Image 1 (cartoon, helix red, strand yellow):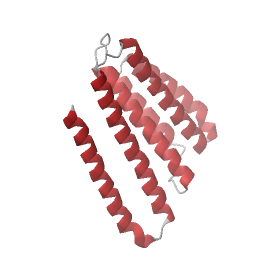
Image 2 (cartoon, rainbow, N blue to C red):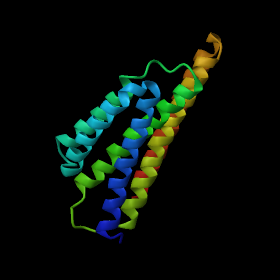
Image 3 (cartoon, one colour):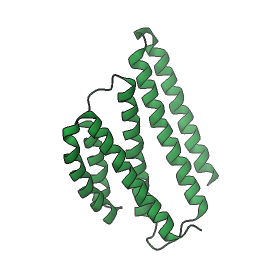
Length: 172
């Protein structure tokens, strides 16, 4: 069993690290927006960690999304797509960490199988976000005739993701 304090600190650390990634992505898009994003993220993070199963978690996810979307434009370079992938991974990590904090009893230890399943599913979703960003970067750099092939690749990757998540949940 993973002790209560260990897994809870790890989940809180994941949320804080995700906030840092979102702040860096927001600052890269529009540096003057970073102080505003910092204030919003601090307030909503405190609320989300106080009530991980309530409206605070939703408010933090929305704040993270808006902090990245407001200063950013449509990604057109590989750098822009990398920032989009990092921000997407951060928001997914926040969602999964807050879900774990909100659904598992506060004083309970975490079974290793549950932690392993959570990490596998989180990794699958993060890699899906990164893969989507890579496909987006390819789409912005390739000739128009390649569009159907990139679309087919994207659909194939969605199928692989669905299969992977299904396989992980069947083992549980």
